[in-house]
Length: 364
Image 1 (cartoon, rainbow, N blue to C red):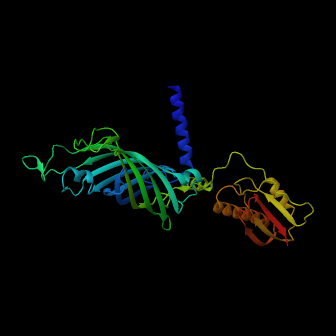
Image 2 (image 1 turned 180 degrees about the vertical axis):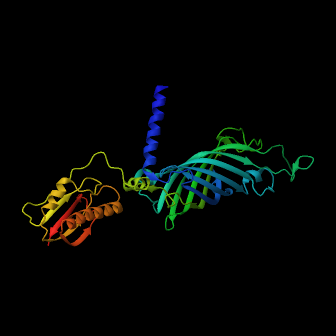
Image 3 (image 1 turned 135 degrees about the horizontal axis):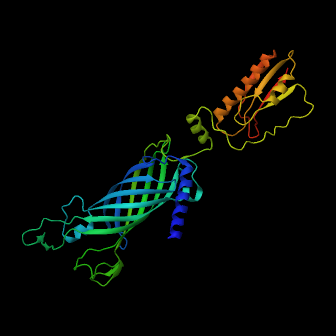
């Protein structure tokens, strides 16, 4: 029991980490609906199509790799119905419902970059239930078109495995056109004494003694799918960038929460460069320290200066631009209070990966 609990905790932790990497994990996110049509046949007799199929699919994306599909299919002109009599008056000969698990092989092996690829391959497998509708236009003697019928409608459980070859189209890849081959394994068979030597087995003999695998069907369909828009504004999962955390915090509080550990400013200013004063700020700060004020007090009142402000790369780019502007403004106000003339003020924000939390005061 203890090992089982640990496994559950580990699985929950892995799922949480995966979910934390992407936007769009609300219940109504990453749903899609599609329609498909095609044909199926017995695997032992590919030259004789078994009949046409049409269906509708509803899919929920759990992660960019894993999704769940709910599928409803109807068969038309199914030969199993036609073999019981010379014809079948039913419009729909059988209906099937499947619950499938889908694995996006491209995202699994190559990674997800925030938008689907133009071409993707998905593996699909699941379990389903099929209901056959046999003809019921029997006469009082039990005859159908000259033959005798004593069977009822058939219920059957199926297993389905296949591949989806997807082409993602549209400006935001909101449409998908798919080719979907599959194999269906029937877990029970029709109890027809004129055709089968037994029931409930996969390999049987017909009246001529020929053995073949008849419990497996081959199916191929083509379809189109529409992906509904998610809460992140796209039609798919969005990769979370580190700056997204800052954006959320800024909406909750007036000032972003300071990080516990501040990086030490390591801006190196060449010695001997005259006329340049470097004013350093703490992380996410725009207040002058006593050291900064001492440096500004050393600037002569008779000069004209230019001010250039910067910020470090951490956090949101737009916020850092505003932060560098506030730093420029506080230095400008302090110098003007001392009577120093200001020629130009420029807030540069983040100027590269080595950008630091400083303001340069340059004497013209």
